[in-house]
Amino acid sequence: MNSLLQRIKSEWARLAFRERVLLSVSGGMLFIAAVFFGIISPINQMAGSSGSRIQNAEMQLQRMDRLEREHFEIEARLSGVEGRIKNQRGNQNIRTLLENLAKQSAVRIASMEERQAGKNDHYIETKVEVSLKSVSLSQTIKYLHNIEDSNQQLSVKGLRIRGKGKGKTEGAETLDVTFFVSSYRAA
Image 1 (cartoon, rainbow, N blue to C red):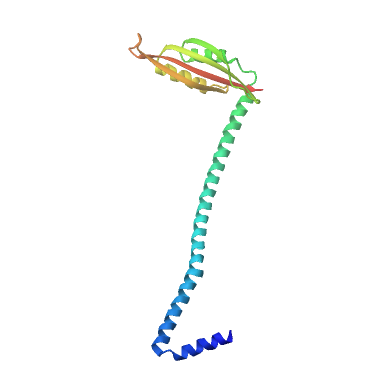
Image 2 (cartoon, rainbow, N blue to C red):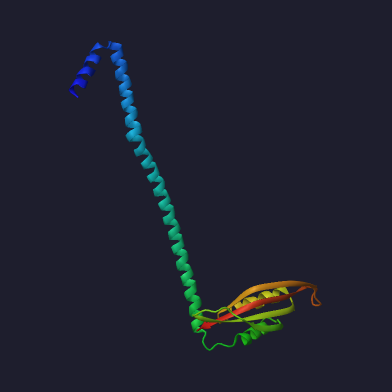
């Protein structure tokens, strides 16, 4: 190693001043490039990628906060529905209730048939298909509103409306309406 160092010193001494300056500047530039590409550039890339990782983590945190709020809202609505289901013990039969609500809405029910309902370990669903013939839109809306607003936990599903043309009363268009009403009680 000592002989190599001695040889480099003797070669350096034989170089002209311009050659020494040129070799020193070239060596300095090579050293600066090695430091930049070997140390500074990787650190800069790591800092940039950590910034994007932080930004992604903040976005995920915001999503989680939003999902948590939605979860609590859904849980609150579910407990409200479950409370209404538990508190409706002793309420009247769904068919009787639908007939009474139809009278309040000035609607005549054409047919009402029980259908097979979904199964659940916690709740028993009673499903009724209701058909209305030659009713106005306002009567239909009033009846559906009364169903949804009743003191029993009822849910209207699968609404089908067919227009029949002008009716005899007031020249208004009449409708044939079919829908399902589900009632729930604790199992």
